Image (cartoon, rainbow, N blue to C red; front, side, top):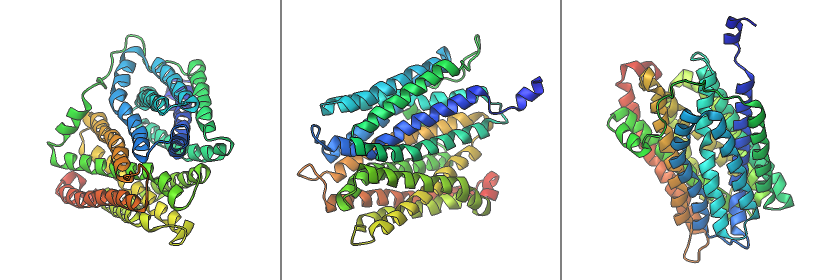
Length: 418
């Protein structure tokens, strides 16, 4: 093949391998979400709703602090060794949770998983290394697709496997990670050439970057909005399994299917509806509409039950929530990208994701406090106040989006998109 032919080729073997790596990584991650609350709530752990919230939060805290560290190390020592070591670490974390006999070991497994799960930024850096500038957007778009597909299949697989034992999905996730590590070892070459100068350090203080972004009104408003959105969604993600178990009597298998349904709606929303509506109405309006839909769905959720809405009502609320998120989340990412200079793209989107990581750590902690009653359990009142708090956060996000829309309408560069 000629040099020009090689340049036009997009799906190279390394790129396919790293996509498979991301996909398998997210299948394992997606398997844990609907299973962990049931697993931690059963003997010998008997975790309270607050402790289950901490189990979700500690994973995201570790990701928040270690993602830039792993990114910086990969800049200097290569993407391949970081991916390999971190995937093996994920396998160990899953095995530890599956074999655990105490809640402390479950927490340790989540901490290890959070540290090693911070390799997603390294995978993104690898894609950036092996794609041309012209193909970069396509490469990152497919990264998002692998992310979404893994998240759809993960809960469904977990639901099926949970029939054979609540701990089985953790062993399966560990096995997937080991297969993933073997693929990286045998098929993934290093993407950083010897002697190449490392890029901009990924180890900057993320909190300082977030605070600095607030100095620009438009950028700060969009970052705040994204933080609120992810916080509310994280509260829902943590509380949803416990809510359906308490109100509907659903087990891990049924919740796995529900999460797969939510993921499928999200794929349709982001892959089809968002592109269709963005061209017609602009991202700024979709951002506001998405916030409104999420607020309505979260407010409605506590009213649902077998005798009030039933499964159909639950599926409808989940669809509204998922489509709302599919409208708001990519709108914010797109707008931040548009208002940033070309040389600031990576930094601007990195700050946005730093805020999202922080929100994913804070959300379950808020949910854990709200869902826990005096008897260290949950009831209808704690369920209502948890979902209504998430709805209130989204109502604040809606007001913030209207303010952002006004700011954006004053920006000449975005006039056509508003």
